[in-house]
Image 1 (tube, rainbow, N blue to C red):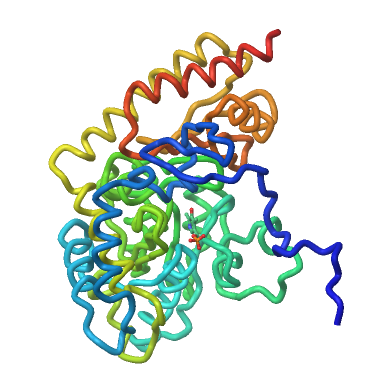
Image 2 (cartoon, rainbow, N blue to C red):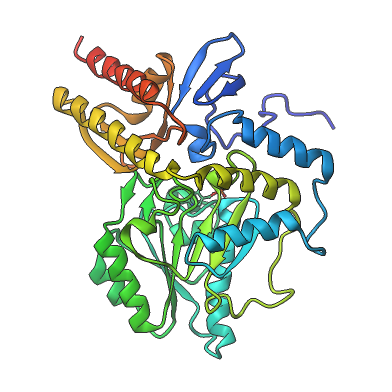
Length: 395
Ligand SMILES: *Cc1c(COP(=O)(O)O)cnc(C)c1O
């Protein structure tokens, strides 16, 4: 059979930018021509400690020389250590490891259904989710988010999600019925346009869950792991979920995801009920442990909060100088969004031409997701670049 030469060799599901990065160091990336870029994309909030962090490189290479993978048929020390540390620093009492955000959220969904099944109420299997949400690209997670952009052409979708408008507490209350198992939400919507859920709303959801015996699931795949200046975004609101999904920053660039839960919420999950071949292998867990070493250092997260405030102040000053060009600044910590007057993808392209990498999101937002180890000088440089693009428009 001859190959259809007109069809892309890489499945054309991405609109790729024509830049090849050759190496990185901290917040900087270099392309093949040696051109330097300041990375405020971080691989979409993944490289939380920047590129080639010496502690991560050391942990990875040291583990690579020992053993990479053994399967969950055996005990894995690096995994046990990682789980213990996630538990010691969160609401959770138990941890399941996987390889991506979507898989982490799948585990959250399955756990919530299984919880009620295990208690003799299998009819309680529906989960309330929110418009504008993003939970991943598997069939369950696109069904949970529901946006046509994600689901078109992929029917039949998975049943069992009741999607309510964003920030509509009354709609949530109305959606709760005898079949409801859980409420699932991102404490800060990432892809949806960097929309933080106000602390009062998160507390309101917790109260609703308690009153109706529902499980509260937080998708902290993007906003977790120090991104907001707290290890988990929900800490700032003082609200603990029953189940939480993590990924992105957890491995600092090495693929790993996690589902954290209370013992009660996880009570239906018995041997054989769920699994993952690669999930939690020694190599991934060694790297995630190294990420935690840094995030949990005395003062690290406090510094992220200070850097977040600093970046935000600078951006607010830009907005004050260019009110017609920048209509909104939103987000938390080092997870900030700008709403430019021009098309966000054009804005991001102009920033990139000037050497600053950012990520577009829904609602015409441009996401700024610098590594958590960013310096004030680089923040100043990024803001100068943003201002140059804003000023360019006036020319
Ligand atoms: C990225 C993301 C996911 C999906 O993660 P993948 O690793 O791409 O599967 C899920 N939820 C949120 C909030 C995300 O930002």
